[in-house]
Length: 425
Ligand code: NAD
Image (cartoon, rainbow, N blue to C red; front, side, top):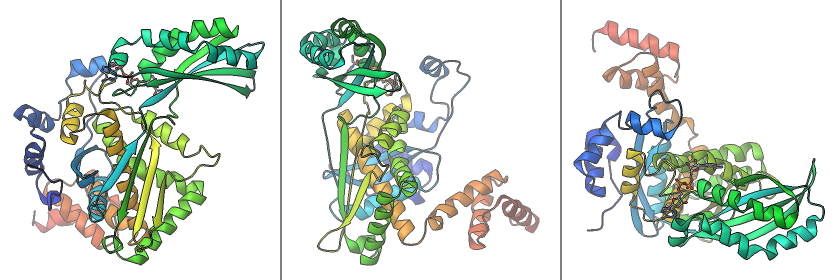
């Protein structure tokens, strides 16, 4: 049976009811659903092996974005995030996009770049040629380090070298191109870069310092695009508003930073839920947004001949399904199961689609009703909780603050006192 991600009224359910829905959708076991409900489901002995000096764990809410149709397949999207409105906006945007046939995605091969820095080379231009001439020997040495990656169809596939001018003079930078298949690849690539360094020193006559992966993963890109019918987005005026909002981000780095932060709200939600390295992806995204020499928007929004909105997004996506902490963290494993993705590339494409949805949700709100409308009502609940509200008092206080357009801590405290004094709760 084909299962739909259209879960009408999902947000109105209790967490237990939502979990029952997800259990059914993703065939979760009793043990997996119990783990999702257990706030301490990252055992101390596992956490203690993940990082250093562990004293505890840090829980973040895990929400599900609904309505995603990607390449004609339904996905429910687990998102780990502390910020209100993000999951709701992604679900709402995915619903609009669904009306236009959903998201379409693609990606390049999962190739990461490993850099080897060589200094003190007497004849850098000739040395560069000697490096490329030794390509076979260097690639073989790199691949000898990782038979598992090679047997999975990956491994070092190519080698490049460039000369850069620095404050310390000319440097030769050799770059290994490694197909990482289903891993993010930093450890794999760094190991290879370290192993080939002696060969590179020998052929260049220089001294190698750094041997490290680049997070500007321009050879590992994920892409997503969509058509949003003008009717679904709120009419042609809203389409024009969104296209203008994009033009602002494309032209002004101050706006572009916030525009791209909105895209990353969605992407990082998925990246964190699957316990991938979100710093690597954020670094890659922002660097990619500046590759023309001027920081700009990662996405594009246009109006087509029918007056419909067309969005597209391309960015580096160093994401894994194996390796790192993806298979160590019990909740990440469940998130991958809910997503139902089979390869790291598929996961990256889903993340790109979520980023595009998130961007659409934010731009529509900004160009239409203003961002605070949706944001503040959720924010009000957080303020109410911080002010000491519990149980039903949270929604009562939040609703009253929104009604009075006073979403502040002092107001929340005042309302808590008032409600308590009224004896209604
Ligand atoms: P890893 O070392 O845990 O696993 C990689 C290995 O998994 C491969 O080398 C391969 O031998 C094996 N493997 C098994 N099945 C595979 C398959 N289907 N496809 C490909 N390989 C397969 O992980 P990693 O992805 O090499 O490194 C990721 C970690 O490195 C993350 O924790 C990240 O935070 C960290 N890191 C990041 C940076 C950076 O981004 N600059 C730097 C250093 C470390």
